[in-house]
Image 1 (cartoon, rainbow, N blue to C red):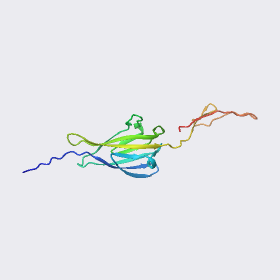
Image 2: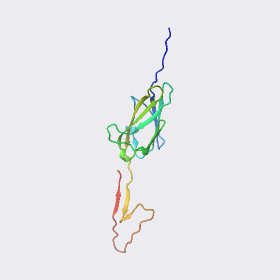
Image 3: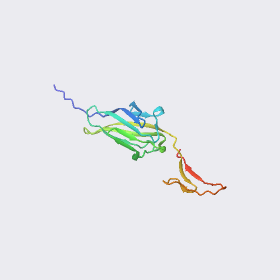
Length: 171
């Protein structure tokens, strides 16, 4: 008798992620239960460059197609796509002060081989920590402090020079 084995299309998996920040620090994390977590000692400071390289494997040897969704599952936050780039499992991201706390990035690895595409969902949990940003000087004595030229004021001998200083602090 003859047995014919018909191959099936198996889904790809994401094995690990290696991240690096602007200081050149790099860490490797293993995917656990379809989740990568960056919190505590691994949290991302706001305004710091973050690069994550995901390593995927397809048991059939099919090409892996990567997509990313930055919408929080409970609709609390959506990371602006202008600050995030994602190509072939390589994610670059610079979190801002607006994204302090928990953020979710959902990554899908899929292959298009077979009658039905096979997918693997990976949830990235990213905790963004605050960094102390310097205050911004807005104006001094009614003059815009954001000019390229020096501010000029007239002071008279034996008289106080009173100026109002306006500033803001994003923190």
